[in-house]
Image 1 (cartoon, rainbow, N blue to C red):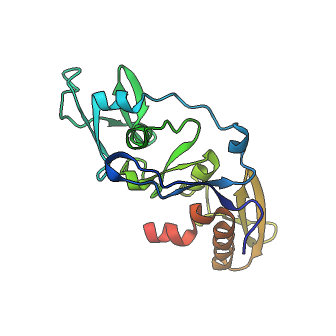
Image 2 (tube, helix red, strand yellow):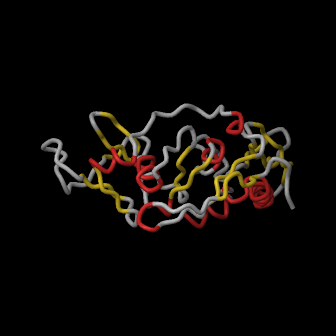
Length: 216
C-alpha cells in the first residue's frame, strides 16, 4: 500500500567513489518536497576533494580522519583530526575554517559537494562517520531520522495522552503537517497505529517505536 507523498526515488546512484566504493543508496524525499524547487536551507561551501586530501586522510571503514600534513603543534601529520561539538557531530578545522566531518567524508569519497542536501547518519549516531553509515537525503528525510522528541511525555513516539478523550492519541508529521491517527484505549494500539503510518509514509526513512525499542 502506498500513500500520496510517500518516499519515492529521486536519484538511483551506483557511481564509483574513492577506493572502489559504490553509492548504491537512493536519494529519496517526498515528491512535493521543497528540494525540487531548490528551496533547501543554504549550506557552507566545502573544500574540493583535492583540497581536503591535501590536509586529511579518511578511512571509510572507521569513519576517522587523520592529518595528512603538519599545520600546527596540535595538528601534526598522522594525528587523529576532529573534535566533538555540542550537537554530537565531529568538526574538523581546515585552513582556519570549521567543517562537519560527515560532510567532508562525502566530498572525500565522491568528489561532490552535497550542497543544500543533508548527509544523514543512517544509524542516528552523529559521530559514526563510516561511509556505509552516510547517505544523501533531503532536509525533511533527515528530520525524520531522529530520536524521540525531548518534550514527549508518553515514552512512545507519535503518541500522547488526551485528557478530554481520556484516551491515547496518535499522530505523525508529513511535510510539516500533522496527520491524526485516531484515539486508542490501549497504548500499544496507539503505538502500532503510529508505526504502521510511519512505514507507509516515510518508507526506508521510517523510525518506528519497534526500532527505537530494539536500539535501546
